[in-house]
Image (cartoon, rainbow, N blue to C red; front, side, top):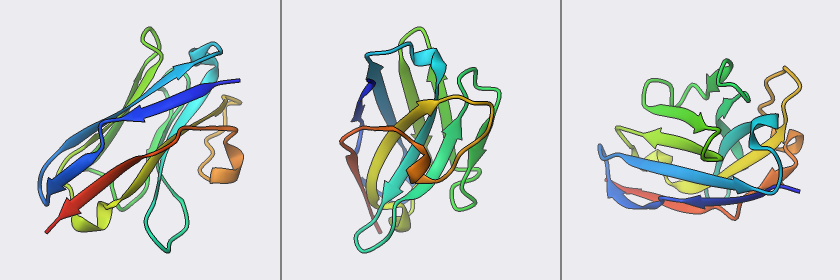
Length: 125
C-alpha cells in the first residue's frame, strides 16, 4: 500500500504560480512512477504530468507544456508540480497518483493504483 497526501492548492489570480506537493508513505517511493491528474466539475479526470521513478521519463499534457513542471525527490518521498502562468481553465481538483514503474509511461487514470485525496486549485480571471 502507498498513501499519498497532496498539499499546496489554493485560490490565485490568472498569471500567478502555485507549487503542489504530494508526500508518499508506505512502500519504497523510488519503485513508483508518479502522475499528477486534475478533474474540473463536469469533466473527466485528465493527466497533467507524469514522471518515472528516476525522473528520466517526463511528459506533460499539451495544455500545460511550458507552464507546469513535475519533479520528484526520492530522498523526501515527495513529488511536486510547479504551476506557473496559471489560467482560469486550470481550475480543478488536482490529484497525485502512483503505480509501479514498468518502464512504460502511462497517462490514463485507470493505470494508476494509488491516489491522494486531491487539492483544490482555483484560478480567478
